[in-house]
Image (cartoon, rainbow, N blue to C red; front, side, top):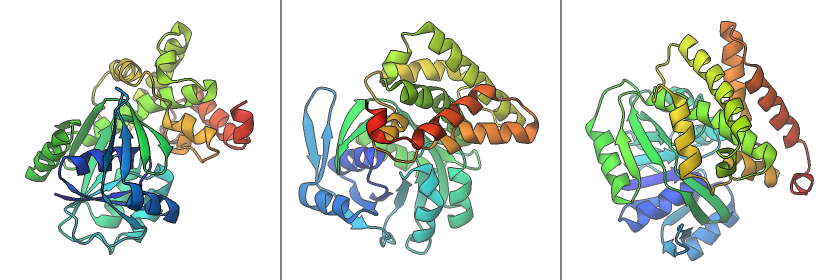
Length: 311
């Protein structure tokens, strides 16, 4: 399978590298010429939990790139870059290609559908944990589950083929009839974990050992669930606290993407997690005070110097 991945950060390199090692024809696309150059010269390096490092030789192109030959195009950019990255490639992707989001947050699928059309787009989530150590160099900080599905809630041959390709690369992958519910469930869980880990500057596993934090995160979940019901979304799994505990356990050593962003002085995805839940809560008249608080705290922290955050 020919696979293009737009975004060569932690998730893009993890999936691109392991898919390439498993025999897929992978092209990583990135907007930074330095990142593209390093991947071309050195490949993608993946440090496993065991300490073993593997290197995958994959193609790398500067965005926007010609992806007209690809069977599958994966979006692995930050949620706030979805519209721009997809727009750049709207006429650079073949009509036969499937477009799959493996991103954090709410709204990515809707944005991609407006640009590429509903038929092309697949919904997806992953709880794979990866830490970006440098350009083209990631640590696999926890094995999770990847779920993909048709927007129309029907199984399809292409989803089965993609899932098989992912499983061949070592990713636990399943096909779901309800990708929207899976995306919402992950967003609600991320809204509980990511800002708390980022504000406290601790790995995910630390949160699991603090009863008070677990109780607070449970309240954040409940607000998100209430908003999802108002949006007529059947979240999957229906009880996200189960997913929360599983993610904390399987990614215990991982530093959340939001924490990594704050430490590097980058914009976070808070507006597409807690911010989106707050906005939709306001639309339906549902109070979301804890999500509002976390969104405000992270938005304030984004304005601070990364040297202050690392002090």
